[in-house]
Length: 297
Image 1 (spheres, rainbow, N blue to C red):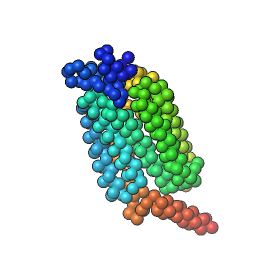
Image 2: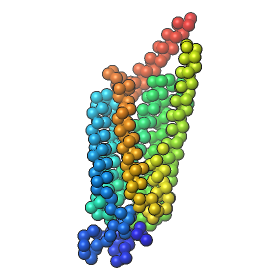
Image 3: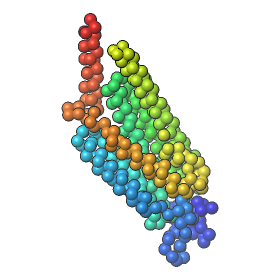
Image 4: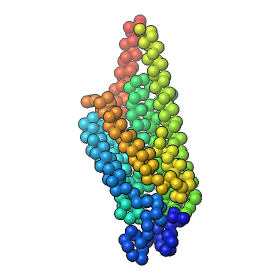
Protein backbone atom coordinates (compact mmCIF):
# COMPACT_ATOMS: atom_id res chain seq x y z
CA UNK A 1 0.00 0.00 0.00
CA UNK A 2 1.63 3.24 -1.14
CA UNK A 3 0.27 5.38 1.63
CA UNK A 4 1.68 3.23 4.35
CA UNK A 5 4.82 5.28 3.74
CA UNK A 6 7.07 2.45 2.52
CA UNK A 7 8.03 1.38 -0.99
CA UNK A 8 9.14 -2.12 -2.06
CA UNK A 9 12.78 -1.22 -1.37
CA UNK A 10 12.04 -0.47 2.25
CA UNK A 11 12.53 3.29 1.85
CA UNK A 12 10.13 5.70 3.58
CA UNK A 13 8.04 7.67 1.10
CA UNK A 14 5.73 9.57 3.47
CA UNK A 15 6.14 11.19 6.87
CA UNK A 16 8.71 13.28 8.75
CA UNK A 17 11.34 10.59 8.19
CA UNK A 18 10.80 10.19 4.43
CA UNK A 19 13.98 9.45 2.51
CA UNK A 20 12.72 8.78 -1.03
CA UNK A 21 13.84 10.96 -3.93
CA UNK A 22 13.31 11.12 -7.69
CA UNK A 23 17.06 11.22 -8.22
CA UNK A 24 18.32 7.95 -9.71
CA UNK A 25 20.25 6.03 -7.08
CA UNK A 26 19.76 3.87 -4.00
CA UNK A 27 17.05 6.21 -2.63
CA UNK A 28 15.06 6.46 -5.85
CA UNK A 29 11.31 5.89 -5.57
CA UNK A 30 8.66 6.21 -8.30
CA UNK A 31 5.98 8.87 -7.67
CA UNK A 32 3.31 6.19 -7.35
CA UNK A 33 4.59 5.24 -3.87
CA UNK A 34 4.04 8.80 -2.59
CA UNK A 35 1.01 9.90 -0.59
CA UNK A 36 -0.78 11.18 -3.70
CA UNK A 37 0.54 8.45 -6.03
CA UNK A 38 1.27 11.11 -8.65
CA UNK A 39 3.56 14.06 -9.26
CA UNK A 40 1.57 17.32 -8.98
CA UNK A 41 1.23 19.25 -12.23
CA UNK A 42 3.70 22.14 -12.44
CA UNK A 43 1.61 23.89 -15.11
CA UNK A 44 -1.63 23.73 -13.13
CA UNK A 45 -0.08 24.86 -9.85
CA UNK A 46 1.88 27.75 -11.35
CA UNK A 47 -1.33 28.85 -13.10
CA UNK A 48 -3.19 28.87 -9.79
CA UNK A 49 -0.37 30.85 -8.17
CA UNK A 50 -0.57 33.42 -10.96
CA UNK A 51 -4.37 33.67 -10.71
CA UNK A 52 -4.44 33.99 -6.92
CA UNK A 53 -1.54 36.46 -7.07
CA UNK A 54 -3.44 38.62 -9.57
CA UNK A 55 -6.61 38.39 -7.46
CA UNK A 56 -4.62 39.47 -4.41
CA UNK A 57 -3.31 42.57 -6.20
CA UNK A 58 -6.78 43.48 -7.50
CA UNK A 59 -8.36 43.09 -4.06
CA UNK A 60 -5.64 45.20 -2.42
CA UNK A 61 -6.23 47.98 -4.94
CA UNK A 62 -10.03 47.81 -4.52
CA UNK A 63 -9.79 47.54 -0.73
CA UNK A 64 -7.58 50.63 -0.49
CA UNK A 65 -9.71 52.53 -2.97
CA UNK A 66 -12.99 51.85 -1.18
CA UNK A 67 -11.53 51.48 2.35
CA UNK A 68 -13.24 48.14 2.91
CA UNK A 69 -10.62 47.11 5.46
CA UNK A 70 -12.35 44.14 7.10
CA UNK A 71 -13.28 42.64 3.73
CA UNK A 72 -9.75 43.27 2.44
CA UNK A 73 -8.20 41.65 5.53
CA UNK A 74 -10.21 38.46 5.02
CA UNK A 75 -9.63 38.23 1.26
CA UNK A 76 -5.93 39.12 1.57
CA UNK A 77 -5.19 36.24 3.92
CA UNK A 78 -7.36 33.92 1.86
CA UNK A 79 -5.30 34.64 -1.26
CA UNK A 80 -2.04 34.48 0.71
CA UNK A 81 -3.01 31.05 2.07
CA UNK A 82 -3.76 29.80 -1.44
CA UNK A 83 -0.43 31.13 -2.76
CA UNK A 84 1.50 29.39 0.02
CA UNK A 85 -0.56 26.20 -0.43
CA UNK A 86 0.09 25.92 -4.15
CA UNK A 87 3.72 26.73 -3.45
CA UNK A 88 3.67 23.59 -1.31
CA UNK A 89 2.32 21.60 -4.26
CA UNK A 90 5.20 22.88 -6.39
CA UNK A 91 7.55 21.56 -3.68
CA UNK A 92 5.80 18.24 -4.17
CA UNK A 93 6.31 18.51 -7.92
CA UNK A 94 10.03 18.81 -7.23
CA UNK A 95 9.83 15.98 -4.72
CA UNK A 96 6.50 14.06 -4.47
CA UNK A 97 7.69 12.67 -1.12
CA UNK A 98 8.31 16.08 0.50
CA UNK A 99 6.56 15.95 3.87
CA UNK A 100 6.92 19.74 4.48
CA UNK A 101 5.42 20.35 1.04
CA UNK A 102 2.51 18.03 1.83
CA UNK A 103 1.75 19.73 5.16
CA UNK A 104 2.04 23.23 3.64
CA UNK A 105 -0.37 22.51 0.81
CA UNK A 106 -2.96 20.54 2.75
CA UNK A 107 -3.10 23.10 5.58
CA UNK A 108 -3.01 26.32 3.55
CA UNK A 109 -5.29 25.25 0.69
CA UNK A 110 -7.82 24.14 3.32
CA UNK A 111 -7.44 27.38 5.27
CA UNK A 112 -7.86 29.81 2.35
CA UNK A 113 -11.59 29.33 1.68
CA UNK A 114 -12.38 29.98 5.36
CA UNK A 115 -11.13 33.55 4.93
CA UNK A 116 -13.32 33.98 1.85
CA UNK A 117 -16.28 32.75 3.88
CA UNK A 118 -15.51 35.39 6.53
CA UNK A 119 -15.52 38.08 3.84
CA UNK A 120 -18.94 36.86 2.66
CA UNK A 121 -20.29 36.83 6.24
CA UNK A 122 -19.23 40.45 6.66
CA UNK A 123 -20.78 41.40 3.35
CA UNK A 124 -24.11 39.75 4.15
CA UNK A 125 -24.38 41.68 7.41
CA UNK A 126 -23.95 44.93 5.48
CA UNK A 127 -26.47 43.87 2.84
CA UNK A 128 -29.00 43.17 5.58
CA UNK A 129 -28.41 46.58 7.15
CA UNK A 130 -28.67 48.27 3.77
CA UNK A 131 -31.83 46.51 2.56
CA UNK A 132 -33.63 46.20 5.86
CA UNK A 133 -32.78 44.42 9.14
CA UNK A 134 -36.49 43.77 9.64
CA UNK A 135 -36.34 41.09 6.94
CA UNK A 136 -33.57 39.11 8.67
CA UNK A 137 -34.12 36.50 11.32
CA UNK A 138 -31.18 37.75 13.41
CA UNK A 139 -29.30 40.95 14.09
CA UNK A 140 -26.93 41.72 11.17
CA UNK A 141 -23.82 41.66 13.36
CA UNK A 142 -24.80 38.26 14.71
CA UNK A 143 -24.14 36.68 11.33
CA UNK A 144 -20.40 37.15 11.49
CA UNK A 145 -20.14 36.90 15.30
CA UNK A 146 -21.59 33.39 15.03
CA UNK A 147 -20.33 32.06 11.70
CA UNK A 148 -16.70 33.24 11.90
CA UNK A 149 -16.14 31.47 15.28
CA UNK A 150 -17.80 28.38 13.76
CA UNK A 151 -15.26 28.47 10.91
CA UNK A 152 -12.43 28.91 13.41
CA UNK A 153 -13.66 25.90 15.38
CA UNK A 154 -13.80 23.77 12.24
CA UNK A 155 -10.28 24.88 11.29
CA UNK A 156 -9.00 23.98 14.77
CA UNK A 157 -10.39 20.47 14.34
CA UNK A 158 -8.76 20.20 10.92
CA UNK A 159 -5.45 21.48 12.33
CA UNK A 160 -5.58 18.93 15.16
CA UNK A 161 -6.30 16.19 12.62
CA UNK A 162 -3.35 17.37 10.51
CA UNK A 163 -1.06 17.45 13.53
CA UNK A 164 -2.06 13.94 14.60
CA UNK A 165 -1.56 12.78 11.03
CA UNK A 166 1.95 14.23 10.85
CA UNK A 167 2.95 12.65 14.15
CA UNK A 168 1.66 9.25 13.01
CA UNK A 169 3.08 9.58 9.48
CA UNK A 170 -0.47 9.37 8.13
CA UNK A 171 -1.37 6.03 9.72
CA UNK A 172 -3.73 7.36 12.41
CA UNK A 173 -7.43 6.78 11.72
CA UNK A 174 -8.23 9.12 14.62
CA UNK A 175 -6.41 11.92 12.82
CA UNK A 176 -8.51 11.39 9.70
CA UNK A 177 -11.73 11.22 11.75
CA UNK A 178 -10.91 14.50 13.52
CA UNK A 179 -10.12 16.20 10.21
CA UNK A 180 -13.37 14.91 8.67
CA UNK A 181 -15.29 16.15 11.72
CA UNK A 182 -13.84 19.62 11.18
CA UNK A 183 -14.70 19.59 7.48
CA UNK A 184 -18.19 18.24 8.14
CA UNK A 185 -18.86 20.97 10.69
CA UNK A 186 -17.64 23.54 8.16
CA UNK A 187 -20.07 22.20 5.56
CA UNK A 188 -22.89 22.24 8.12
CA UNK A 189 -22.06 25.87 8.98
CA UNK A 190 -22.08 26.85 5.31
CA UNK A 191 -25.42 25.10 4.75
CA UNK A 192 -26.98 26.99 7.66
CA UNK A 193 -25.52 30.26 6.39
CA UNK A 194 -26.80 29.65 2.86
CA UNK A 195 -30.24 28.81 4.25
CA UNK A 196 -30.33 32.09 6.16
CA UNK A 197 -29.20 33.98 3.04
CA UNK A 198 -31.97 32.40 0.99
CA UNK A 199 -34.53 33.10 3.72
CA UNK A 200 -33.52 36.77 3.87
CA UNK A 201 -33.68 37.07 0.08
CA UNK A 202 -37.14 35.46 -0.02
CA UNK A 203 -38.50 37.63 2.79
CA UNK A 204 -37.09 40.78 1.24
CA UNK A 205 -38.43 39.89 -2.21
CA UNK A 206 -41.89 39.17 -0.82
CA UNK A 207 -41.92 42.48 1.03
CA UNK A 208 -40.88 44.34 -2.10
CA UNK A 209 -43.51 42.56 -4.16
CA UNK A 210 -46.21 43.46 -1.65
CA UNK A 211 -45.11 47.08 -1.68
CA UNK A 212 -45.12 47.11 -5.49
CA UNK A 213 -48.64 45.66 -5.51
CA UNK A 214 -49.74 48.38 -3.18
CA UNK A 215 -48.07 51.01 -5.33
CA UNK A 216 -48.63 49.53 -8.74
CA UNK A 217 -21.65 24.44 -1.75
CA UNK A 218 -18.16 21.53 -4.04
CA UNK A 219 -15.05 21.83 -2.52
CA UNK A 220 -15.83 20.88 1.07
CA UNK A 221 -17.96 17.91 0.03
CA UNK A 222 -15.12 16.85 -2.25
CA UNK A 223 -12.56 17.06 0.58
CA UNK A 224 -14.79 15.12 2.99
CA UNK A 225 -15.28 12.37 0.42
CA UNK A 226 -11.57 12.49 -0.38
CA UNK A 227 -10.55 11.94 3.26
CA UNK A 228 -13.31 9.45 4.10
CA UNK A 229 -10.89 6.63 3.32
CA UNK A 230 -7.91 8.40 4.90
CA UNK A 231 -4.93 8.84 2.60
CA UNK A 232 -5.66 5.58 0.79
CA UNK A 233 -8.96 6.44 -0.91
CA UNK A 234 -9.20 6.82 -4.70
CA UNK A 235 -10.23 10.50 -4.71
CA UNK A 236 -7.09 11.79 -3.02
CA UNK A 237 -5.07 10.24 -5.86
CA UNK A 238 -7.14 11.95 -8.57
CA UNK A 239 -5.37 15.19 -9.56
CA UNK A 240 -7.86 16.28 -12.29
CA UNK A 241 -10.64 16.09 -9.70
CA UNK A 242 -8.55 18.18 -7.29
CA UNK A 243 -7.85 20.78 -9.97
CA UNK A 244 -11.50 20.99 -11.01
CA UNK A 245 -13.31 20.93 -7.65
CA UNK A 246 -10.67 22.65 -5.51
CA UNK A 247 -8.51 24.97 -7.58
CA UNK A 248 -10.95 26.05 -10.28
CA UNK A 249 -13.91 26.46 -7.92
CA UNK A 250 -11.95 28.68 -5.52
CA UNK A 251 -10.56 30.74 -8.39
CA UNK A 252 -14.13 31.30 -9.60
CA UNK A 253 -15.12 32.30 -6.05
CA UNK A 254 -12.33 34.83 -5.54
CA UNK A 255 -12.92 36.48 -8.91
CA UNK A 256 -16.65 36.55 -8.20
CA UNK A 257 -15.74 38.60 -5.13
CA UNK A 258 -13.86 40.94 -7.48
CA UNK A 259 -16.88 41.35 -9.77
CA UNK A 260 -19.30 41.68 -6.84
CA UNK A 261 -16.93 43.69 -4.65
CA UNK A 262 -18.83 45.46 -1.84
CA UNK A 263 -16.75 48.62 -2.22
CA UNK A 264 -18.90 50.51 -4.78
CA UNK A 265 -21.91 50.24 -2.43
CA UNK A 266 -20.48 50.04 1.08
CA UNK A 267 -17.18 51.83 0.51
CA UNK A 268 -18.66 55.19 -0.39
CA UNK A 269 -16.66 58.31 0.54
CA UNK A 270 -17.49 59.13 4.12
CA UNK A 271 -18.87 55.70 4.88
CA UNK A 272 -15.77 54.79 6.87
CA UNK A 273 -15.54 51.59 8.88
CA UNK A 274 -18.13 48.86 9.24
CA UNK A 275 -19.41 50.47 12.43
CA UNK A 276 -19.77 53.80 10.67
CA UNK A 277 -21.69 52.19 7.81
CA UNK A 278 -24.02 50.59 10.34
CA UNK A 279 -24.68 53.92 11.97
CA UNK A 280 -25.14 55.79 8.69
CA UNK A 281 -27.54 53.28 7.17
CA UNK A 282 -29.41 52.69 10.42
CA UNK A 283 -29.91 56.43 10.90
CA UNK A 284 -31.11 56.63 7.31
CA UNK A 285 -33.67 53.92 7.97
CA UNK A 286 -34.88 55.68 11.11
CA UNK A 287 -35.18 59.01 9.30
CA UNK A 288 -36.96 57.32 6.40
CA UNK A 289 -39.39 55.71 8.81
CA UNK A 290 -40.08 59.00 10.58
CA UNK A 291 -40.65 60.73 7.23
CA UNK A 292 -43.12 58.04 6.18
CA UNK A 293 -45.05 58.39 9.40
CA UNK A 294 -45.20 62.18 9.01
CA UNK A 295 -46.50 61.83 5.44
CA UNK A 296 -49.15 59.35 6.47
CA UNK A 297 -50.23 61.66 9.32
